[in-house]
Image (cartoon, rainbow, N blue to C red; front, side):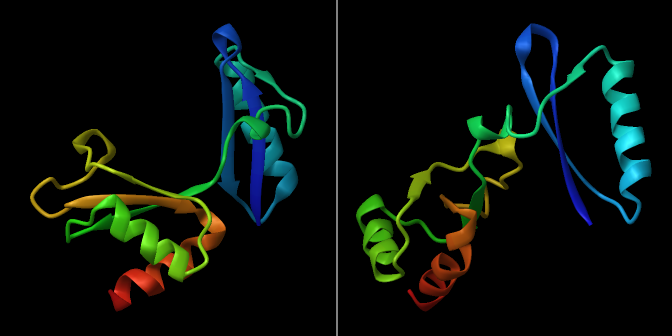
Length: 118
């Protein structure tokens, strides 16, 4: 089962902790122990998550311009997408990755299909 916990760190920095476990009670105890060990505090459900959006990051081996990406997104009925340059700090292999598309996690499949066809 996928579990999500929220915490506040030093200076009020919000943390989202995702984990997989077959034992919810053990996972909660372990996560709470780790949070307390580093001096963080647990947060109420939803108090940190509302600040974030789940995004999918597609690394493309072909270069694509923003106009082409927008046309493909409209064709796939994808509302929220953006183009960014490859970034070595995010793990992109600059010799292979030419473009990066960010898209809403729920629209990932549609965007992958339309990019494959292009």
